[in-house]
Structures are given as structure tokens and as C-alpha cells.
Image (spheres, rainbow, N blue to C red):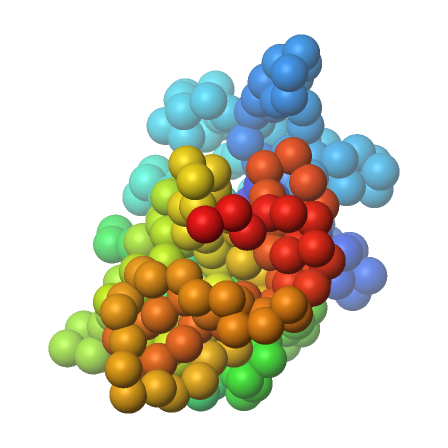
Length: 302
């Protein structure tokens, strides 16, 4: 299969590596333009571009996907298929160009969690499993016909961070299988059921704010869902305190949001049905530390 690979963040790199290590032919890579980053606002390359250059692949970075120059360049490669991982929404002018169209590896079990942050919201809502769906791209976001799905359980200790790593590799494996299916004319499509679809909107820096009117279980899921980014947090003395690990205890008498010192080694924040117990915390300008060290550092001033 002659492939044009499209992706931008680090999540897409294992899939590019896998395709390059296969018998399929990656002709070029399409990724986002370089963007200013950091205090100096120096231009930084997307992770996919960095890897593509290491692999000596041609790199295309269109500002607009409908740009005639870009479209003509794409046509000149005569790809069989476009392989998309964590990239922009494609217009029909792009995804209809190859004979086999474009396929996308999405980190959820579609039609659940359509959108930009499927891993975060699967953990947040307490799903027992997640996975990767490879689907044919069409006009609407994440709605195309399903080609292949791979499933994994979500364990009680899983965070978005460690699931991200697992699903990276699962996406790579699933795309290799998909390319072989196209090559051997063994693709069976499954239509998505829109009636059971759920959204996975983009997360923002404030998405991780903890709401102590929720149950302890829901709060602990939020901590796992927003670790490592954007971080679950609460405010104390005007400061944003991040929490990367927590547990909870059921308790009949609570005052949601109240902070109570239980011992020299533990404090609780009252929630809907008991005590939310932070186990790892980070104050502004400090590193993440366990609750004992955090309390000993004088961070808990009531």
C-alpha cells in the first residue's frame, strides 16, 4: 500500500514507526505547521515532523488543507490511502483523493467518545474498557464506517497518562492490520449507531477543577482522568493545588468543600458522600509530593 501519513502530536509517532517498519510504502508525512513555543517563542516542530525527518521522509505542512498547491502535491504522490492519527479535520478534497480514501485511528470504542479527548472522558465517566477504532473518514467528525476495533480494560488504577501510552501502540498495531486488510481486499465495514454516540470535547486548563459536591468515587475518577494533563486541582488560600493521586472514604456527615485535618499524615476534603483523601499533591512552583511531605512542608494553612 502506498501511504500518505497524517498526524501531529507524539501520540501518532508509534503508528508512523510501525508503518515504516512494514512492507507498506510511506510516501510522505503531512503535519501541522511549526508553532512558537516556550518563553522565547521559538518555532517548535511537531513530534511527527521530528520523527519524519529522522526517517528521511518528505514533510508537508499546509496552513490550509484546501490550498491548491498542497492538493496538487498530494495528487502527485498518487497514494492508495491516507492514514490519519491525531490530525485536523479533513475536507472531502483531501480524503476523497486516494482510491481507498482515508482511515483514522481514534482512541475510543466508537461511537462512544467522539471528539478531541476520548481517553480523558472514558476514565472520567468510569468506563470499564476502552480501545482503538480504525474507521473510514467521512464528512462528519468520528462518524465514519468502522473497519477494526481493538479493546483493552480500564483498571481502577489507570490514568489518562498510562492509557495514552498503551493506546499509542494499540493504534499502531490496529493500523498495520487495517493496511493488510485493504491490501488483501478483506475490509468489512460496520456502520456506527448514532443513537449511542457520546461526546469527548477538548479539555482545557480549568477542566480539572474538582467539584466537591460530587461523590468521592467520581472525584477519584476525575483525578485519574486529568492526570497528567490538565491536572485535577482545588483552590487553597488562593493557590491552585494539583492532585495526581487520591482515595476516598464513605462518611455519613459531610460538609462538601470543608477541609479537615485527620492526622499529621492525612487530611480530608469533605465531598458528597464522605472524605476525599489526596495522596499526592503539588503546590505552585513545587514538585509533586506525597501528602505527608506536602503537609510537613507547611502547605496546609487553614
